[in-house]
Image 1: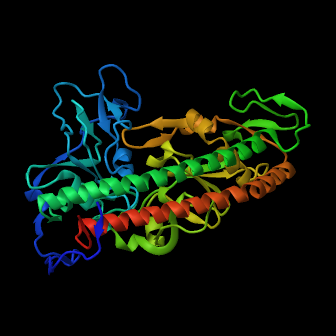
Image 2: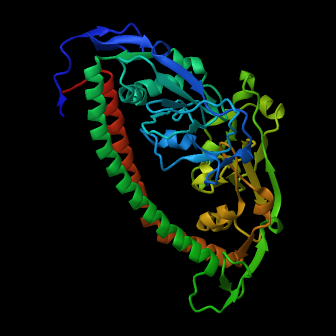
Image 3: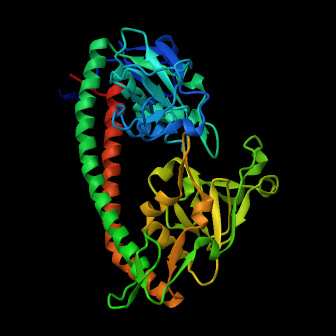
Length: 450
């Protein structure tokens, strides 16, 4: 199959400003006239959900499966208790699934299509399913249509919220859907299946390369912060299985014994415009992405600060995410480089002067998977940190002068790895941009496939 760069013979005004021109013979209808929308799981508690299968529980599609895949992966189901008497909606083949709540505008209304034949499959609570009933619509085409940058932009504008972005059901139902002929829909979907598969394979190769580089970087950091830099130093048993042996002069202390103060913050009312954009940096989970935090995506006003439970974290303090969907991947932890307010999903730690904030951060990030295994808690849609377990976690602590030497060593030896990772990430972004441009151009009729 090839792209015909001559485009379609003629175009017309769609009558919808954000859509613009479409091929002359294409139709336009609101999605609600093409099928029915339905809700995900309801009435469930945290302990009803599991990532592991046990006898009698049912499969459901988590929001990450929708966010990360053009087509739902049957290898990424989670599990939930569902009684036979419950009235829960089931996902069927060719249903298109939408994420209705997310931490970022980029993810709101992300969609994916289920093409399997699972006999009893359910949907995450914060999602909606759409079932086409119009036989003139090819489901795979519709799925690609809503993945296009034009529709992604529309849904981002419709999203509302600060700590979490939410989308009302009517924005799915009332979205205008472009309708080519059925044969064109199938040609578009098959073309994009072929092209996006090739792009995804290229992305996967680069992601695997990044994973190996990150693994190497973590090994370097983990060995340095638990064993030091002198290979000839006498070692002793730390008494902690995941730490192992440490240099003889080091101490092992529980985190609660090196923390002077810890606190979380809060979120001003989103209904009060006077509480926002007032010059006070305000950190939420979307900000905790880098080692050092210099700025935040949102600001609050002095009035918003005083009228809420938000608290200010001082410069140099540790900030980490205690509740978020991202905890399944990594322990998100940053050091504040300026004073800033924090929300309820962020924990601020102020440490004693016998341990550097940067060194503490290296211990946590260098032992990421081991520490997460000790302190992570699974909830219905997000994960959280068991703070009691976290504060009781023992960590190895050398003298301040040795902490500085280890920090200097790790920064120097991991710089080349960080550069290589950055280059690979840029290559992935270019591939994603090409994929997005290709999808948008084809499903909106800007270019023709034949």
